[in-house]
Image (cartoon, rainbow, N blue to C red; front, side, top):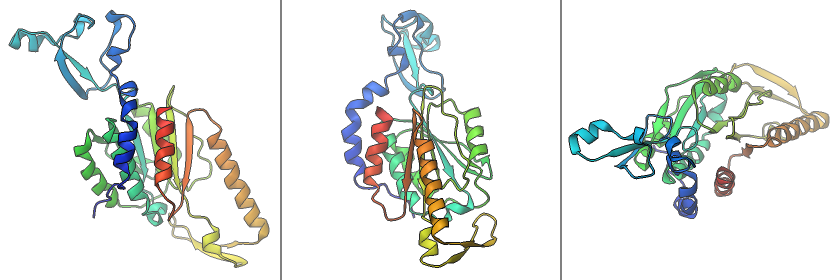
Length: 278
């Protein structure tokens, strides 16, 4: 079964299309000095067009010129500005957040619909899986199916996985989707970029109810743990969650969203896209 995008996604795409030209112009159009225009740093071809007077002559594809007798230049997706990276948590603790499938699928659908190239990695135990490159709306169906069929297991270790991603990814806009099972995750932001943290969260109070103590099973270790659940413990947990949200939300270029099961997804899409384009 495929995680279909929410029906409101098309409306959001149409609403933001007027911003597409501003945010996705090839960097070769933006340089002030024509001699220093460049066509992007990745190898993902964007378009081939005829040479124009403002282009750098060094950008001419001479093989095409030899075959056609006309000068053409190639433009590539600039990895530093045009694309975005998705880092998906595939650890065991994410099994209980299957509602995340529709959200991740829908957000990818919106970004692809606006011309954003997506590079996707899943991680578990601090190890990254194979890079998946999404280019255009035609690539969404396969991605949605892969998200729906994702196999979960192992520990979270967001810190290690994020560090590995930063080491091999030049993209300046990164999304991390996780329950952030670890408590000490404090990421290093991309240079002059944006980092979006989407946390899928189930309040501990839903498990404990009104009991004085509660037994829970750690999904990553499989161990049963008996914890106290009194007023002091609840207050400490609430304080810790508030401090975590404040620390993550207090950095420029970092956007922190917390989603629970049953929450309406549409407001999250609008908030994320507003932050993406601001």
